[in-house]
Image (tube, rainbow, N blue to C red; front, side):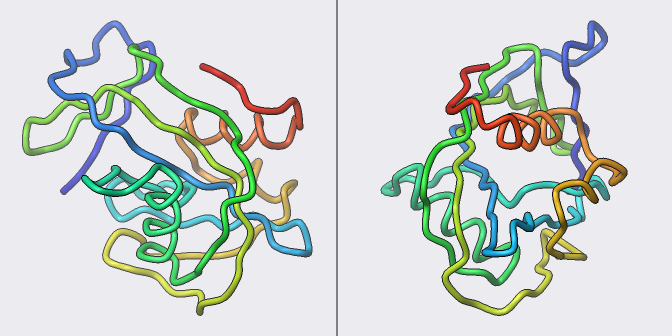
Length: 155
């Protein structure tokens, strides 16, 4: 399934769903950030996805990181909450999802780095190496919020 992101775009389709989601800024002992190159849009992104019934937002971030990157993580904090009603994701099945995401901070605890059916490339990056990667603005914003160190943000 393909996905197109619209952020504050007057030509964006109207949202028809709202789904809680989590993402994770996973930082290793060397200060590198874990990113995946998504199969649905070809862009680099943080691991993350929609929350399932019966799980917490932290469990969601842990599960999605493992599924998408092969890495097990421990949640250590919160980067911010992202609920901009002007940010929608349009899927080719007709769903247009309004953003509702909590971005958590995590550290790796194990696993083996690998791609998945949602990511065709997974890698660790020094923070300054991220700037030139193709990435949607909302993901770049989360990384910048983490780099700023200003604590949890509400957007």
